[in-house]
Length: 390
Image 1: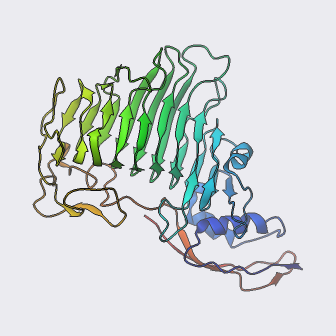
Image 2 (image 1 turned 45 degrees about the vertical axis):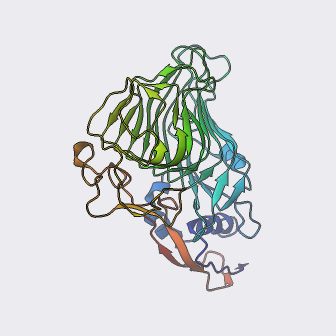
Image 3 (image 1 turned 180 degrees about the vertical axis):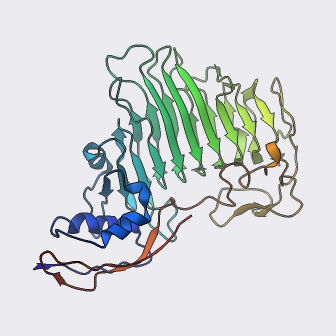
């Protein structure tokens, strides 16, 4: 007979705890039949191994650091990371990362510092990785690896969703033909800091299809590279349905041929672009409200008009989770975007009134093990209550 210590989970705990309990119990129990229901509820975990990370001694997991989990994982595995602050890590495998939350009022926040997605050799890289519900102090995409020839140093197909990203940089290998492509930021918060689309001014490689959509961008500055040299993106940088706020100086530096559609610039300067396209954007309370300006092009823009957010300070200000970026009746942003969508967060492919605070993963609100012992070969009963988190 195996003895178990009962653990009761409360509203601040999440599905991560259940995965951790599962991981720990399977070391001593030969059969836990009730877990079949768990994998039926979240089928997106069913085709890969799930690894757990926690640096909280009261919430034990398989690993205490993100790097340990990355090293143990196989391509396309999933890593669940409980709330806490982690030193970061480097991955050269395609993995899926779930944090617990990016705002701490209901669930603890998962923060990762200095996180790098890279390439190991010509056949293995972190291309295809996904990150959900994590606060990143710094993210780097680095396609370089030793012994590479031109054109081998590539990364592609990354998604950051419902994350906070303070600083970001793309680093190609520095050779002609090197490429970073198809990177999407969706429903993210950029809380201020820098976003470098390219890093090396010499042979910076190719940057393709970088999309920032339905995000709140607060005071962040976007650069072509750290030396400020002009870089032509040929329409491969797309800002769509974002809300730019609280940026009294220019937002863009040394960037040519970007595309901006359905964005709201509220007390945030849209300046610093050249030969770029502005379609169906709104400016309000900017020092330079007029768009397009200079040699930029575009149409359908609404200049110096209050978008009439449901709840946001009239004179602007930094992001708050209490704000509602939905549109009041009569808003000039209502259905005036490209293809008849709203301008701002409530339009486009990932519409929201405010940014979600956690990933699309169920949260356990109650979990109990009603018995203290189970015979060998017996069945362990686990009682779970959970809520969906859309």
